[in-house]
Each structure stands twice: as C-alpha cells, then as structure tokens.
Length: 129
Image 1 (cartoon, rainbow, N blue to C red):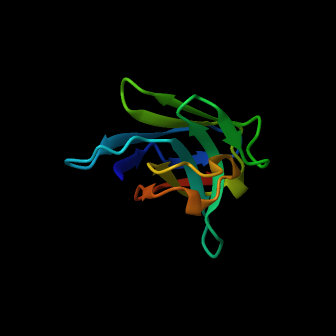
Image 2: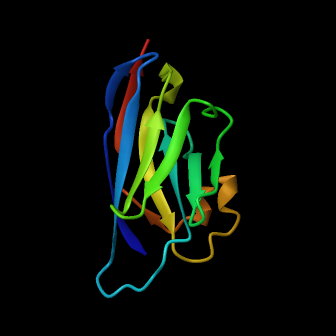
C-alpha cells in the first residue's frame, strides 16, 4: 500500500474551477508498485462513487457525469495525481478521495472502490449555485 494526501479542495460558485492534488508516498519498507490511481467522491447520505481513473500507461476513465469537465493526470516525477475540475456544478459537491491500487488493478476502469487498496483522507469540494 501507499500513503495518499489530498489537497486543493474548497468552495467555488457554479461554473468555477478547482484543481485537486494527491501526493503519493510509499509506506516504509514497501516495494509495492502502483497499478492504477483514481479519484472518488462521496456526498452526504450517498455511496462513494468513482469520478476518474488512470493506469500506469496513462490510460484514463471517467464517470459519465464528469466527462468533458474533469481531467485526471499524473506527474510521475513529483509523485502527484491531479484532478482538474472545470464547469463545476452544485451536484459536484462532495468529499473527494484519492485512491491507488498496488495489486493487479482489476477492472480499474470501472471505477469501483473495491478495485483500490489505498485511500487518502479526502478533501471537501463545495459548489454553490
């Protein structure tokens, strides 16, 4: 597993933009390699849902609700995952979590939480109308 720390959340008005960052660091003595990473979100009273994912080859996957508005990217030199969020809507309001999988990345593109074995603590995004 790896340690993940999110940042960049905040409050914006509808139509605004935010960029989330996720700093990645291995646990001490860990030799795990990351197969894929993703962003998930969870609104109060709702289940955690996948937003975007990216594998070690740079292939990406997006939830239909964010296609064309959000972009996931990774900087392997800085060991950082990003989520650029544009044209934000009130329904994007949620706690956003960074996730990684260090096993086999089974069907990671389906953006199921069960496919990821490492999680950050989350960063809050609030979009007002």
